[in-house]
Image (tube, rainbow, N blue to C red; front, side):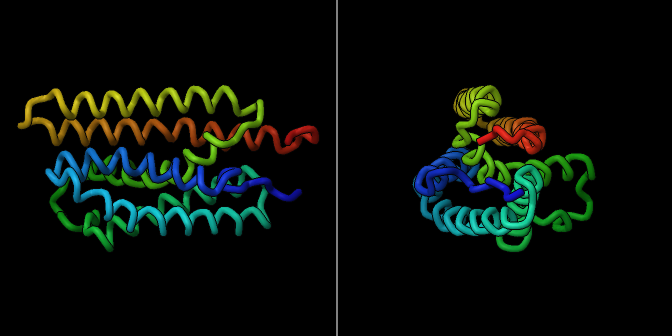
Length: 200
């Protein structure tokens, strides 16, 4: 069975949603926390437009030989892995940068980075999937994303400056790690529909 695993029905909307997710996070981590309120825009576009083009191509390629659920899983893993490579080798946030860093916080941070890049690629997919069986997950995922961003922005701008960085980064990590619930829920929904001949 050929997988219907296109990264969103509308190319422009796929890129818009991906850049929106990335841009809203980058505004906090780069614009506010690093005090470059205007300097985050161009780097965000330079980093995430090629990334979205690449993962979209990966999505089309894996769709040729895998089931829809399998292809989306590979797409998710590839997007997160590409993001980690960018963080480690281009940005310099490698896990071996500080050999003395505690293992558990280090693991959480890098899982969060993985989840962020994977979310930039996958959120536009399930937000554009208009099949009835996806509607509940799509609606709850959209509400969670909006509420999470509201909480992140609120905390960032109301907490004292001396704790702004750890509080904001903690909220960002929690939000994007939690989005994995919706990503894997989406993949499970696709898998459960794979044997339904009446699915779209």
